[in-house]
Amino acid sequence: MSLADSLSSLRAESLSAIAMLSSEEWLVDYRNEILGKNGKLTEILKGLKSLSDEEKRGVGKHANEIRDELSAAFDDRKTRIELADIERAIASEYADVTIPYSRTDGSHVHPLARVRDEIEDVFVRMGFRVYESDEVTTEYANFDAVNVPATHPARDMQDTFWLEGSGNVLATQTSCMQNHILRTNTPPIRAIIPGRVFRNEAIDATHENTFYQVEGMVVDRGIHIGHLKYTLETMLSEIFGKPVRTRMRPGFFPFVEPGVEVDSSCPFCDGVGCRICKQSGWIELVPAGLIHPNVLREGGIDPEVYSGFAFGLGMNRLAMLKYGVDNIRLFLDPDIDFLRQF
Image (tube, rainbow, N blue to C red; front, side, top):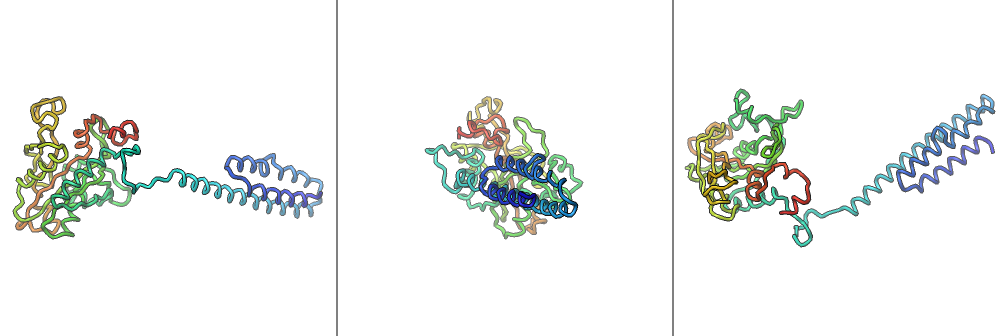
């Protein structure tokens, strides 16, 4: 059999075999057998030395064409095998995430999702509208629009992650939505804004660089600090399933004036004192206050006519208290044993 016939026979045999292969492992082995350094094509081409120069050129060109054709066939078959593997995985691993969970089939709701659902339910019943917070936002919305200009020292307290070359940031607080909501709504405004936020934090048992927060805000005529206190006590009492009292201490936050630190009576000891509240009877929980006139003005709202309150509640912190979790890192840990508790 001539070299040309041997090459044609190898081509036909290889193309037929490639089409039958069903795994990447077999494909790699067969490719080495045909096109490898010591493969069948190389063995056939060793016979070129016995041919004339003109015959070598013709057979060599034909061999290169066959090599290219077989290489393309191997690559195409590899792609088809990969797609088939993906389709099989989708068919066997598919889960319809829209199906309501059921404890009877082993399903569990993540504690953060459970707390978020409860918070949203409480506020919707109080007439609030739920907004989804942006995870990527502008420097203006995250800082300047809420009274934190570039020279303000409070920016150092919220060191964040910047998107290179864009001027955008990963949101450090769900209050980055305040300006948008103020500009696109006419008072009265009642809104809560749950979402994920990011800060350049050292991670330990009580600090994370990625956590969940819910912003609450109300803007209307005659809003005062008593409305804030009632709203928070109603929400906390619903979450903990028992009456919760609050107290307020002066606190500084650039986007509110006056600003307050809101403590809740300890839901575990009813204010008597226990290990959770460090025997104080109180748990520091929510930074809040009346919306700063500069923030209202920046959102197109006349602070001479309208006032409002805002608060930022850490959902991770609330979930830790509600479920007795002592390490914030567990919420982002895919530990099935941990999740099965809820």
